Length: 303
Ligand code: RIB
Image (cartoon, rainbow, N blue to C red):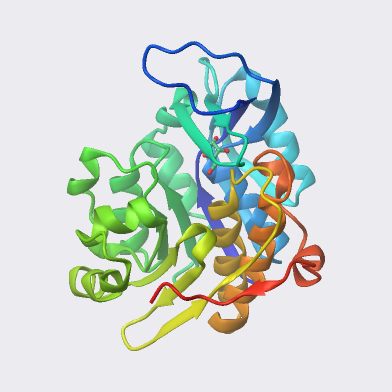
């Protein structure tokens, strides 16, 4: 079984269901509010564990964050490497509109209180060839990348949110990037989806890329192959954590030896179920549910 360390964010998600995203100067009322467990890190750990991987989560919460570690533990994720800060946990304010699309504001909270000793302690649990998963919602990402790479650990990076500081990250150390349209454009320098694979290969010759294009499908790009997969068309309730679900299932399955074609199929089926349900972490399916995805396949036709 693949062993994966996810050094990642843990957020409390405040989700507001609205008619449309609030505009500058506008005040709107929400239809309803939910409070869920979330954070790209937490969501991805749950999807990784659901795919069958052995997952260790490292990160930081506040005294209000026990709900987050309780959910990780009950999802089969070890939280022995999650520290507790004196300040509040990270949280996210999420608007979900009537089409199920979201917009997210992050408050970093404890996610930005990562200490150097947490990094060395977490990496002590890995061996060369193991995988570390990172998003850009915690502090000290460049240090984690450098130390992990020096130990021969495979780095999977989801550069979300994109920040100006990322220009100075040692991105050449990344083994696999997981990118949506916005992140793909930022790292490749092109908004032409068909040109992204070659632009990314040229900039990061040592890496592979999982590009997720939302309702149009996904592609997995290596130095000599492009594997395309469409979508399973589900009724869209809430797209939050769809990308986290694809990342977790694809990374967990491929690390466990599943070929990328099959892993992309199962990850896409899992994401279809995620968008058909409310919330971030609560919407992520089991492997059995993903394999039995009831939604019809629509082929990839973006390029
Ligand atoms: O990808 C969805 C996640 O982004 C939410 O759960 C929110 O917490 C933010 O991290």
